[in-house]
Amino acid sequence: MKRSISMLLLYICIGLVLYFIGSLLFLLTGNFEQLAIAYMLITGIGFLSVLSGGTLISRFIMLRLKHDVFNELNETFPQEERLLQNEFSINLPARYNLKGKIRNSWINIINPFRSLLAIGSKLQTTT
Image (cartoon, rainbow, N blue to C red; front, side, top):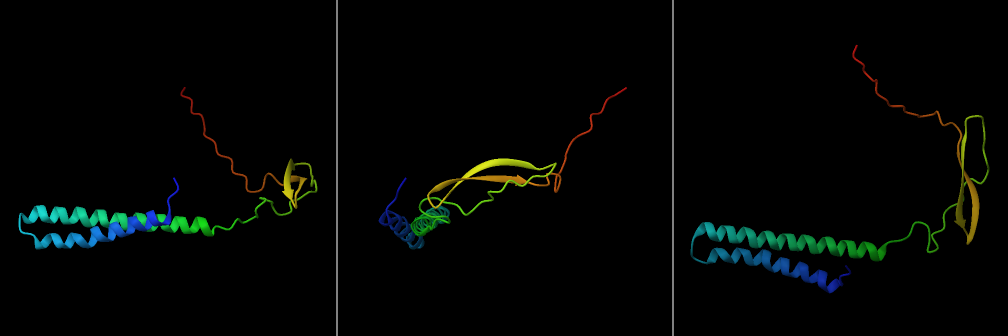
């Protein structure tokens, strides 16, 4: 849902008004417990509204200033195009976009045993 910056500023303004108006409740006469509960509710809602508005403005600004790591064409950096093989290697063909051209490449896993973790469980049988 797209929000305009004026709507987000309205969140913050309403929150600030509620937050500071809450203290005026103590000028009223009446049941102190009810006034305290009303004060906590009004200032809590005001605080959450300011927090929500600030978060939404921060997100709005970050999306406006977001810079794509690659570029507008979503190109990537040069990949390995050589096929590197040995007796245990795993080689996966791949394609990528560089300077407007689709290029062929390889994902080479030269030593699949390095940093390999095998996890299993022992089947227990009762005799």
